[in-house]
Image (cartoon, rainbow, N blue to C red; front, top):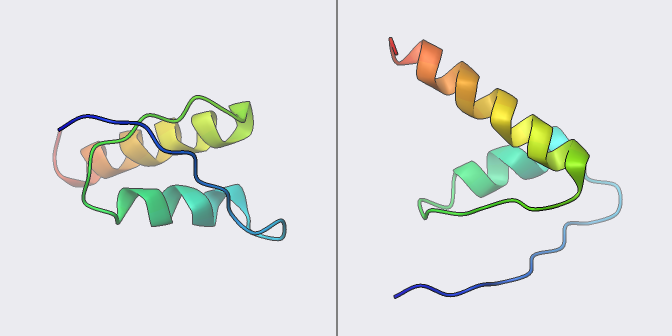
Length: 54
């Protein structure tokens, strides 16, 4: 099943924290905006791949 959802964090949440929370959901997701969160998720993904020896 594929669908879409909008998720909004608290205004005081750091984008780093939002990225980690998304990653911990255990489901595939795509971040389209804001750009700062897109870059943070990309960086987190790169870091996790390196940590796993990739």
